[in-house]
Length: 149
Image 1: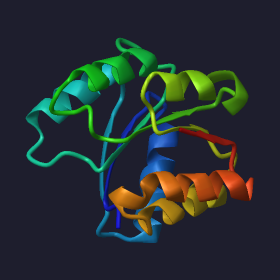
Image 2 (image 1 turned 60 degrees about the vertical axis):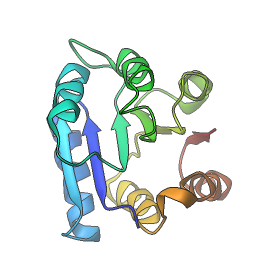
Image 3 (image 1 turned 180 degrees about the horizontal axis):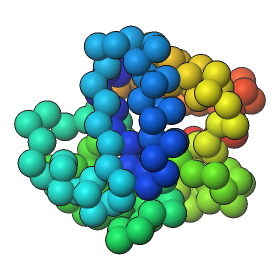
Image 4 (image 1 turned 45 degrees about the horizontal axis):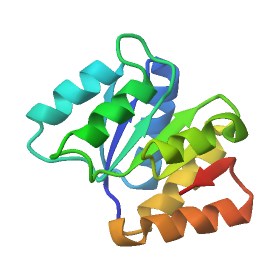
């Protein structure tokens, strides 16, 4: 089961909702967040334990999601962490770019707390080894606007 999440998003409300959804799923889930990509990279370099999955908003100050993704994929110690690009722009616009640049998928931010919780719950029931298959099943269900590698 995936139990260690990291979200980089400058929108405090979105971050709070994400954390609340994970707490409702299982209060033992580890959730860390950063307000931008620069903060994300700094925290990852000093973390005792790496997250199992990273969610990256695209539009953030200082270091946006695209630059953060490039930085993660260039770093030998961080490149293996699966990254989900997570933004309000339509999946058909940024989805293919996200996959091409190394993300495991692009998720258009769900429009409701219930949909976000549903998506995250499906992920928590997956193992890191089954992540891509789980994401493909979610994509096939058409319940979420998602593009998978």
